[in-house]
Image 1 (cartoon, rainbow, N blue to C red):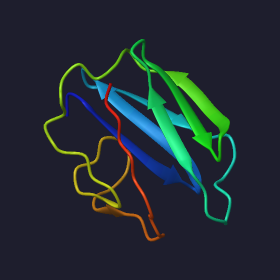
Image 2: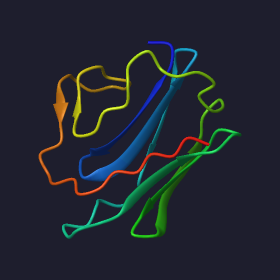
Image 3: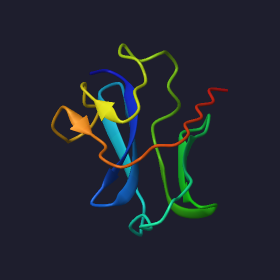
Image 4: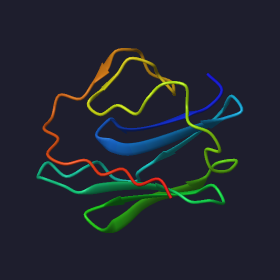
Length: 106
């Protein structure tokens, strides 16, 4: 896969991955997700800076080679991933409850 992105929980830690020109960058939160309802956010800035937040508190950051300059070949999915961007098996299913999803592409 040439390009793509994903957000998931690795060992209960929020993670966000970006693949650009076949190079994978993964940013993982420093702490596990709380067991209670939480608001999570992953941001990819124009310069490639990645930030992860849980309940308004930054829990991770890193840098990708840049932003996604074209739409990935496969669409954005929530709760199940049949086309892995990162280092995990498919299908990858979230077994928790997802109440609301907002995706902004600026």
